[in-house]
Length: 183
Image (cartoon, rainbow, N blue to C red; front, top):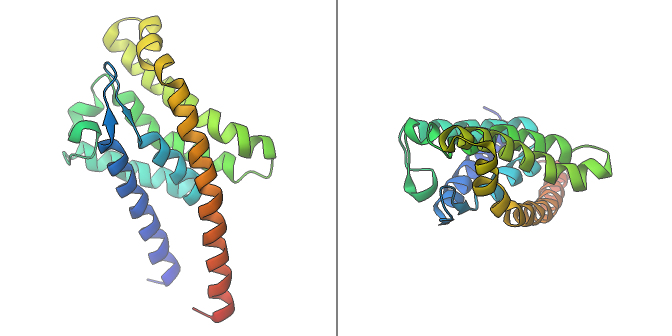
């Protein structure tokens, strides 16, 4: 296995671990807790790119589905994915993909606006749909599972975007040094 492949797998693993830790930092608000998962899901897309961000979040979901306590409140198991909050979890690979796609776009509007808003919308859409099944109302799902979280999630997304610019700048600078010095 070459060093670039090892580096890629390691970076994916780091974002899986960060998302797990982000889930454990949780403040319960009704049926849907506020966690740092969204921050790391979007950051995975921003730093790893669409494909690897998607892969990282799929592996995260797989670990949780297998019963490892990687979700909020140290929960794990397929039952969590089938619970009222499961739609939010299922949305993570898609949100990471969309954030990566938009972030690495040449279009500045995509990079600075759509890379924040579209993945959050994806999370709200899939999360809200599953939550609405449990609460028997789309309006109630929006009221308890989306509206209270909008300011937190937009703030987390923009902080993730700012962090991504720094991380990518640092990563690209080190990559250039490695090419120059032949590492």
